[in-house]
Image (cartoon, rainbow, N blue to C red; front, side):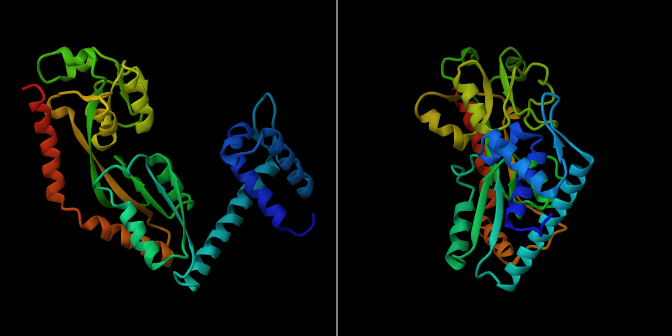
Length: 322
C-alpha cells in the first residue's frame, strides 16, 4: 500500500461509521449516501489496504479479523487526531477552534433554558469558534461524551454515569396531556393512578423509571416514545395520554388541540437538566469558555422561583375542576 493520504483518511472515517452503525443499511442515513455508493467506497478501501475488512450479505454485516484490527487502529488514529486538534486549539487560544455540543430535544421553548443566551454571550466574544450542535437523547449524549465524540452535553439524566461531571442548569415541569374529547376528562375529580390504568398511556420506554407512573404502569403502557415530538404525535392521535413539558405542550393547548389532565399532585413532576462533561478529558480553552458562559447564563435563574412555579402548576391542576 502507498503512504496514507487524504483519500485513505476519508475512507477510514467512512469505515468507522459503517462499523459503529452495524452495517451498510443503517450507515447510509448517517452518511447521506446510497448503499451502493457506500459499498463501492468500502471496496476502494479494501483494495488500497490489500485486505478484506468485512463480510456483507444476507447473513448480515460482520468484521473479519483484519477488519477488527483496522477498526481498532482507526479509532486510535482519529483519537490522536482529535487530541492534536484540541492541542492546536489551545495553542491558538480561543481565536478559532471547534466545539462539539450535544443536547436533548425541544428545550428552546422552556423559559428557564438559557442556552441561546449563553451562545450569544460566547459568540460575541469569540466569533471565529465553530460550534457543531446536535440533538439526541441523554443516553446517546452521555455515550458520546465518554467516547470523546462530544465536548459538552445538555442532558436530563435520571441515572448519572460514572466518569461524567454534571452541573445543574434548570428545571422543566411536565404534566399529563390528552385531547379535549378524551374520556378521562369525564370523571368529576382529580385523576388518580387507578384512572390511568384504564386508559392507553404513552411512556418514555427507558430502562429505568422516570415518570411518576413508570414503575407501576409498565405492563399497562401500550406505546413508548423516546422524545417529546414522538409523544406529541401519539397524544394528538386522540387515543393516548402522555407526559409533555408544559412549555412544549402550550402550542397545542392554545390551539385547543390538547388539554392538561387534572391529576393528583403525585402525578406531576419536574425534570432537571445538566451541563455534562467528561471528567477524564481536559477541555480546550474554547470549550471551557462556552462552559463558563452556560453556567453564567443559567446562574441568573432563581431556584426559589422555579420551585414556586412548580408548586403553582400543582395548584392549577386542582383549580381546573372547580
